[in-house]
Amino acid sequence: MGMETSAESPVPVRTVLQLVGGWITRLGRIWVEGQVTDLNRRGGTVYLTLRDPVANMSVRVVGPRAVFDNPAVADGARVVIHAKPDFWVNRGTFSLAAIEIRAVGLGELLARLEHLKRVLSAEGLFRPERKRPLPFLPHRVGLICGRDSAAERDVLENARRRWPSVRFAVEPVAVQGSYAVGEVMAALEKLDGDPEIDVIIVSRGGGSLEDLLPFSDEALVRAVAACRTPVVSAIGHEQDTPILDLVADVRASTPTDAAKRVVPDVREQLELVRQLRDRGRRCVGGRLEREQAWLSAIRSRPALADPVREVERKAESVVALRDRSRRALDGALTRAGGELEHTRARLLALSPAATLKRGYAIVQRPDESVVRSADDVAENDTLAIRLSDGRVTVTVTGTGSH
Image (cartoon, rainbow, N blue to C red; front, side):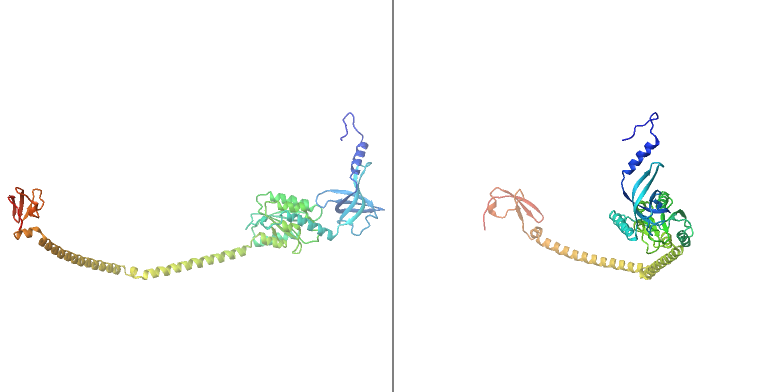
């Protein structure tokens, strides 16, 4: 619950400090990890500053010499301290009263890094499908490296040797120590927000595991994973593998290798262009030769070599077909004429007119029906007798049979 104060009823400084001291005391004993700086031994008491390995924050630590009587405790060492938070009311200062101190060994660091790798891998930050390809020829390259470092020279010199017109935006940062993570993350955010930057290289030379620890920091690794710009990791030498190598889009074994991966070699590209040009010429030349051979073969054929002779041959064929059709038509007409005469003769032979000319007659009733028997007529019937040269009308006077 807050203290009721006002301008008319303020509280003295001692009361405020005593309250703060009471709140801090409630924390109890805690384990704190950090990096030792400003180590100072005076008499039986040891004073040091415990700096956060990532953020620019620190706390004062005080303890008896016996607690710090450990050769591994030195400036720059990573330690874990069991301490009690303490607030000096008289001075208004905060510190940690050390009870026990342990140096963070190499095995413990490796175990922590392996645990962090498993956590990040389970989240999918190392999956190959999330890694982005590098541009063929970047418009501008962002470089995060140490100030005036050999890694910077290796990247710049090798990149410009391969492609002289390549442009860089260099962000010098601390690449080890307590300030490294914060400065690298700030430079990364700046370059990732620049639309002209097509690829970012994070580079530094080799070093011990402790020196490369900033590049295995979880906050930095997640910042690289969140970048929209492809990131190339070139940390240390071939055998050095900080976690940044696993999350970066491309892992380069050295700064020189990073320059080779990011920038193409102009000589190699010119040679490739020459080879492709020669290949194109050979393909086009071969195609033209094949088409020329085909055209020559077509022109050598009789239809194109002597087109008039082909027309004459076709004309002769037309004449022969015409004569053949005429002969066939004449033969057909002759046969048809003979058949017509034969049919005409048969018709004449079978015609009633021919029979009438021989003296016969046809007897018909008024309705022109033919009388075939004497029994078919009666007396006084009127009949018509048809002769070869006319007709005669008669009246029946009597009937009888032979």
